[in-house]
Length: 310
Image (tube, rainbow, N blue to C red; front, side, top):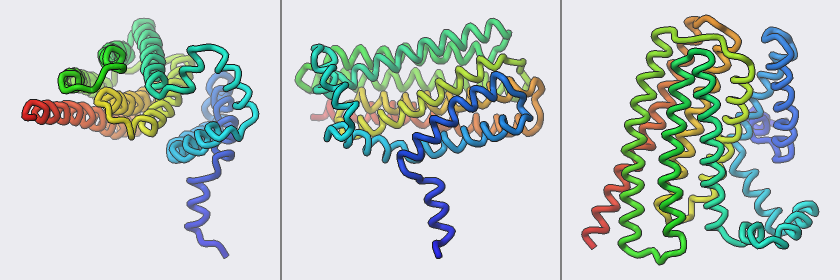
């Protein structure tokens, strides 16, 4: 007889196919529940629980699934992928994407910046429309966050083909240190606004569109953060390492904004339970963001001193 531990492991670590299947079922189901059904509808409750489970197992197993998919793609085990790669090789840019890890990293930076700016505009516009200080501040945060990503992306693009000399390494470390300081100031600002939102009951009823867009962006950002963490872990590049930390911070804040959007969408008043949940989640998220920003700055400063002593 199999132990409960075995069942627990299978529940949290199902096969890759099972994770993908659950995600495919949960995503449209939760959208239907948000758009067409009431929060107390039994189907809505099942959809919320299934989507939470899908997000949990996707995050917990993303590294393993990514490695399995990458191996299958590289070894041409998927016929559709083989055909698609053949078509990509007919164009010089898509062929370069297949062959160059540096080019893929650059595309990752550009795509992340684009999604970041779109979400910033959406949040800022929503903040104006719903007269929400919190939504507006999140929009401003992601605009500044996008500017920081642009600084890193510009530095990476300028020096990606150059020899990694001492001067270039120093320039990269100085850029990362500046971005880290900006992230510290930005995190402290958002923390104060989040405190005001929770403590002063600064809330309003949001449309379901806000919750849906927040959910889609959160799912995208969490997956992107995991993929970048796996892809960049062996790259000896300060810019890519800083980008990985920024992705983690962005994913953490998107989780918090999703939680607040869900609460404000389905509950126009702030109950003690929702306030407690926002306080716990908000504190954890702000600590993660502050730690990433501090580690970026401190490590960059340490690297600068080491380079100057050599």
